[in-house]
Image (cartoon, rainbow, N blue to C red; front, side, top):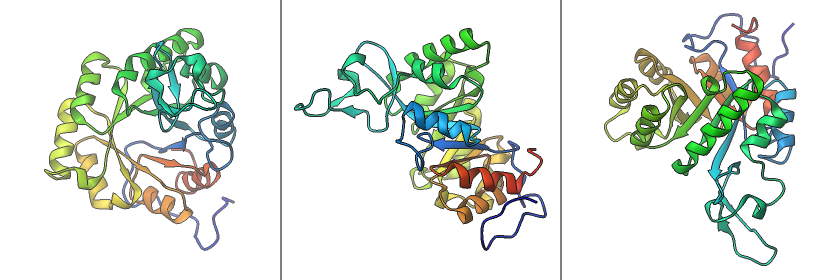
Length: 260
C-alpha cells in the first residue's frame, strides 16, 4: 500500500495532464536542505540516499578556474574580511564547506540529473569541464543529465551553440515574459532550449499544456508542501524542486507508483 500524506487520498488515476517526462525528476534543492546544511557534500549525498532522482545547486567559478557550488556566490575569505564574490577568490580561499564540482562528482558519482543555476554565465565552461572529467572517470553520460539554468534566453542560446548536447532550462517567472508565455514557448522551442522552470505559484494546467505543445518540459520550484507537490504532479509537471526530499519522493511515488 502506498504511503500517503494525511488528508490526501492515494492517486487512483493517472495525472489529469500527462507529463512529458515520466516519472518527473525530483530535484533536491541545494541537496537535502531540510535535512542537512545546504550545498554541502553531506547534503547532496543525503538527498541521493533518500531517493532524490536529481540534485540542484548554484555554480560559480573561482579566480583560478574551479567550478564551485554555493547559493549566494559571495564568501568571507578571512575571519575579519568583508564578503567577496567567488570570482575574486582562489579555491583555497573559500570556506571548507563549499565543494568544487569535481569534489561533488567524486563524492556523489554521476547517476542522477543535475540542475545548476548559472547566475554567473562565465562559470559554464568550468562546469562543462568538470562534467566531462566526471564522464571520463565514471563512464556515465554526464552532459545528457546536466541542466544549465539561466533567466536570459539569449544567454541560453549562446550555451546551445557552444554545447549542443547539454540540457538547458529557462529559469524565470511568468511576470518576466513581457510577450506572454506562448511567444516564450515558441522562442524556447526554436532555440532548442529543453525546459522552463517557474515558481510553483505560476503554474496552471493550461500553462503546462501550452509549453508541452511546443515540446518544452515544465519544472516547478519551491514545491515544499505535500499539497503543492500533488497539485503540480497532477497538472503534468515534468520536474519539481524541493527542500524536503521525503515529501517530494512520496508525492512522485503516489502519482507514479510504477515509476513510469
